Structure formats: structure tokens, C-alpha cells
Image 1 (cartoon, helix red, strand yellow):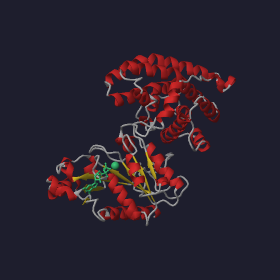
Image 2 (cartoon, rainbow over the protein chains, first blue to last red):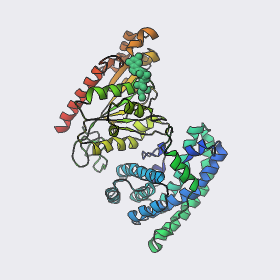
Image 3 (spheres, each protein chain N blue to C red):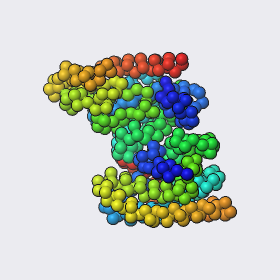
Image 4 (cartoon, rainbow over the protein chains, first blue to last red):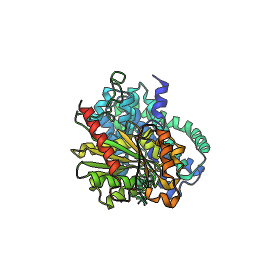
Amino acid sequence: MSRAALLLLADGRFPAGGYAHSGGVEAAVAHNAVHDIHSLEAFCRGRLHTTGLTTAGLAAAAAAGCDPLLLDDAADARTPVPALRAVARKLGRQMMRAARATFPSAELDRLAAERPQGAHQPIVQGVAARAAGLTPRDAACAAAYEAVGGPATAAVRLLSLDPLAASWLLARLSTEADAVAANAAGAAARVETEGPDALPSASSPLLDITAEQHAAWTVRLFAS
Amino acid sequence: MHLDHPVTMPHRHTYSAEPLRADGSPRAFRVGLGGPVGSGKTACVAALCRTLRDRLSLAVVTNDIYTREDAEFLLREAVLPPERITAVETGACPHTAIRDDISANLEAVEHFDETLDPLDLVLVESGGDNLTATFSKGLVDVQIFVIDVSSGDDIPRKGGPGITTADLLVVNKTDLAPYVGADLATMAADAERQRGDLPVVFTSLTSDDGIREIADWITGHLARWRAKAAA
Ligand SMILES: Nc1nc2c(ncn2[C@@H]2O[C@H](COP(=O)(O)OP(=O)(O)O)[C@@H](O)[C@H]2O)c(=O)[nH]1
Ligand SMILES: [Mg+2]
């Protein structure tokens, strides 16, 4: 297993389309729910323990070798609003392209063939982690980190926040992100015996509602 | 045109830069248009569509920075039917979308390749950016950089990757030169110094047939690219 492969997969510069998405922070900024570094921290913490935990579980299960199509259905069930399902599949397609070029594998090829319109992004991320020889825990960690790293970067652009303060915030959240990843990986280990219901299904209704509204905006910087 | 040598990249699973798609059928030729905000990129795209649409099957991808204005302008002007125009969002980073992470743009152009058959040419307009923004060779086959005379006639002298490396440099709005005191001869000399043998054209896209030279340049490249792909 290569540590560097995990850094590559989790890097915001991995060319899989993430830079154009704010993880809901653009809508939160518009509602003034996020307006400074402290409100951004609260937003990120909330996202980490809801969407972050859920996507980390899916990514870990995919990395553990669970049936990605079953997991894809489980992801749909955990993503109630159409806007976010569409985003997850679009990012899944983009992640698939980058992953197949970076970590070629028969499992990625098979999933691409079976879900030509894209599987949910965390599933693709998990299968990519597996192709890279990474563990379920690694995949969960990448997903959990992304759940906060994406919004933090977007908020820096939207609010002209101090990027050093944003890095400080991410460092403060890193212990919690590790714990979320460990939880998610633990749940993923039970999928074999208990089925996908063992996976976390935490959600954030406000993120769902504002994502649906954001998708209808005519003027916006971020795709979601 | 192999941008990746088949021996060094035996397992490459994306075919974005190859002239053939995964199923062996040819894809459309892709032209990128970059340059600062307001230089005339959208005007250029609109004029190209009007001039070429009767001869070629066309589609356009816009990369607006925070609106859908370019796409909406093209729709309003009805230069192409709506299913041939799409906008990509760039998260406040237009250069990322055309250079560092081209996945959203590739999705858009490949969607056109799949849904519009036959398709000859896709124009990808970058969101207006600074002078360093260039297109990835994984996204487009050739790129055009559009500047204009009214933003300062010293821009060609300043250079930057867009000015120096674009396959075609367009210096637009020559009709405004007398009003803004732009010295076209100096601009031409500076551009040549920066670009060596690479071509430069001076245009006024608001005048009749001002697009002619650019259209001819594109169709010439398209013909050569096809001949090479077929060889
Ligand atoms: N005078 C003059 N105006 C032009 C010319 N080309 C474009 N424009 C105008 O310049 C403005 C910006 O053009 P646009 O194509 O939207 O620029 P973009 O931001 O590069 O896409 C518009 O009002 C155009 O009508 C030209 O050759 N001469
Ligand atoms: Mg434009």
C-alpha cells in the first residue's frame, strides 16, 4: 500500500471536478449562515458528521470490495434530493475518468460499464482506493476530509476569508475527521454480514433543501 | 494525433485526446477560445457559428465565470439550436476548468460527440481570464487567444503563455484603434517577436465578414487533422 497514493486521491488538485463544487457552502453564504471563519467551522463540522459520515461509509465499503451496484442503490437511498443525486453521479463520472487513467483496474472498468451515467462519487472513490491498494479506512478518510476540505476552499473564494485561517480550521477538524473515518470503516466492515443497512445514513435536511434551491439559481459561481 | 505515446501509456483508459472515440468512431475537432474578459470571444464564437453552420455540424461549450450569460447570449442570438450549446460551471476558477482539471469540459464535449451525430467541430469558450490561461492539450486540438486593441496596445509585448503559445492570436476590435490610440503596427511587431512563426490575425468582428480569416484558419486545421487521423 502506498501512502502517496492516498495523498494523490485526496488531493484537491486530483482532476476529478471537485473544484467547481462548494459542498453547499455557496447557498449557506447566500443565507448568511456562513459569514466568517467560525460559522464556516460550524458548517464544516455539521457536514462532516452528516454527509461526511455517510459518504465515508459508502467509500469504505466500496474499498472493502462490497458490490458497488448494491452500494450505489444504498447511496441513492441516502441522497433524498434529485439535485444532489445528479451532482453525485456527475462527480462520479468525473472521478471515474480520473481514476481509470490514474489507477487502471478491471473493477473500475466494470463499474464504468455498468453505470455509464456515473455511479455515486464516493463509490467510485472507494473502488479507486481499492485499485490503488488502499484500505477501507483510507478511503473513508479521503471522503471525510473531502466533506470539509471542499466547502472550506469554496468559502475562501466566496468570502475572501484568510486562507491560513481556513487551513487552521481544517487542522482543528482533522481529529474529528479521523474519528468519522474510523466509524465509517467499522460500519463498512459489517456490510458483508449485515448488508448495506449497516452503513451510516446520517443526513442534513437543510443541505438537501438549499442544494435543491441552489440548483435553480441562475447566477452562481459553483455547480453545487 | 497521439498525444500520449502508446508504448509509454499502455493502459490509458480515457480517450479524450485521441481522434477516435472508445468505440473506434471519429470524434469532433475541438477548438479552444481563450483571452481576457470582453476581448470578443463570444462575438467570435457567434460569428463562427453563423459562418460555418451551413457547412459543418457545430456545438459550443461556454465556461462562464458566474453566470450563464455567454450561453444565453448565443441562445438568444439563435446562432445554433439549444441542444448544441451548453455551459460548464467553473467554481470561480476558469483556468482550472480548461487546463488543470478538464473533466467537466470533457464531459460536455463528449456528450456532444455522443448525442450529435455527425459532429464536426466543438468550440470551447473559456471564461475570461488573465494572460496566463491556456487550454490543456487533453481538451482541445488547437487554441485561439483573443485580445483586443482597446485594453492597451502593450499587451502583445507583455506576452504570457496565452499570447506566446496559442496556435492563433487574434487581435480584435481594430475598428476602435483610432479612438483608443492603439498602434497596430507596434502590436503586430511585438506579437511577432513573442510568437515567432505562429500566426496572428487582426480582426473587427463587428464588421461584415470580419470572421473570415479565423474561419478559414479553423477549417484548414480541421481538414489537416482529419487527414492525419485517417492516415
Ligand atoms: N467595436 C467592436 N466591438 C466588439 C468587437 N468584437 C466584440 N465587440 C464587443 O465587445 C463586447 C465584448 O464582447 P464579447 O464577445 O462578449 O467578449 P468576451 O468576454 O471575450 O466573450 C461586446 O459588446 C461586443 O459586441 C469588435 O471587433 N469591435
Ligand atoms: Mg464571452
